[in-house]
Length: 320
Image 1: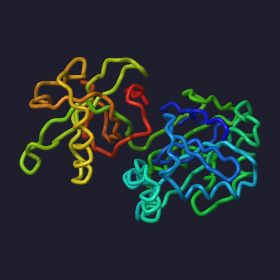
Image 2 (image 1 turned 180 degrees about the vertical axis):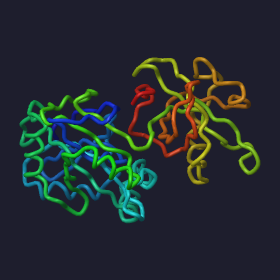
Image 3 (image 1 turned 60 degrees about the vertical axis):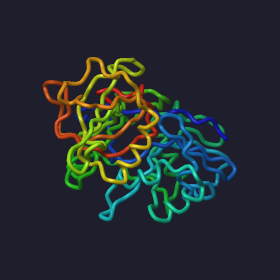
């Protein structure tokens, strides 16, 4: 199979406008670099993990391309009953490693692969070409299929952002038409503009609940690193909303192997948040929605959105 690079990442920011920018929907899904060769498809997540088994319906992409090999960049998305991207539904697919279970889940929760870049074709690297040329080749190569498509590009960023807001989408991505593809790098030539504040955090512990949750997880204590790979874990807040019974059971089983005596946060959380807390090795990454950051550096009105096995804990910062 062709070598699969890590994906190029956008920088969060305000909407850039003017000549030389184009705009795409920001899909609320799982980033995937896709390698196709001799009729086989391999999927790699943003942190380099193999995700091929989890999405068997995407194996059908290889035949229609009609080339010996290709490497593409895209996002795997699941939809809710209203046809909107749903990270919650995608969670039912992301963590499945058994082929039979994955096939069953694919029937119950089918996914779509939104392809937005072409990195290599028939053994030739395309990362040195401008985005506009890569996009032209991508559109020529990929025809819409039952589980994949090349979503439209828009020239009016403000109108697309307003549409994303009206339809409760995650946001949009602005791209320079002359941008080269820089594998593994975060670039200001791609800018993600979010409608809803949402990002990854590292779980450093949990606090017990009250009432029906007595003795069980009442809230996750989450944090972030100052810089990628930087050891200190900074406390961001307690997340209790959005934790359903099924997910609570999954987290309790996962946390059993992560318990440690020492608090991983530096400095420690406020005493009120840390009463009877169970500390964990900071290895599990979760997605959190929130209203804003407070002046004290805490999340306001955070809601749990799901686990992120496609993200590495030491790479999680306050500015994703």
